Image (cartoon, rainbow, N blue to C red; front, top):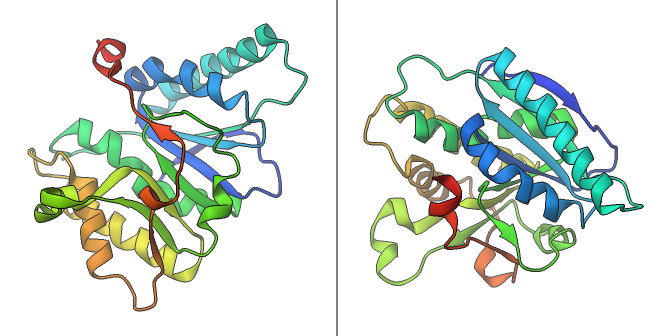
Length: 238
């Protein structure tokens, strides 16, 4: 998948890059909240993949960087801003459901982000927010190639509900990269389908089932990571 890099902070010594994807309209709804919380944890490193034409993405990124500087300046913090970086790709022809692509793009670019920043990738939904600091959570992932949220009970019966796609850690290990590649291959194979909501979760289930022997997969639900979603989403996105 060909993407365009739009610069941003390339600080060395990254532990993991938090990776988001979305179209401009969706990112506009949540970016202020993401940066507000991130500013309180200056060691975080965030990467946003924008699905839009290159010129539109560039203008949005310019505005977003101004927003980040404004939030930081208004709060009069003495610390640095968290590292923000950006990339973009256009919506490919033949995609059955654009909304599905916006959500799945993070899985399609994950390995390129790993290579660009020489770091592991922590994929998060744009509408997640922390209820406790998350900067040190990376230490809980170190023994794993993959960490994801496994469902319980009746949700285990449906492949598209077994593993949630909005909070997934992918290590830059050989097995972690193979898992990322299998997830991306599955997504690419079904992007032309119009009824493809939860495609990324189907892809994760397939990647788990076909993971290379010895792949160490952790359940993020057992690690007490302070991220959640609120019931405000409908109002925020309206």
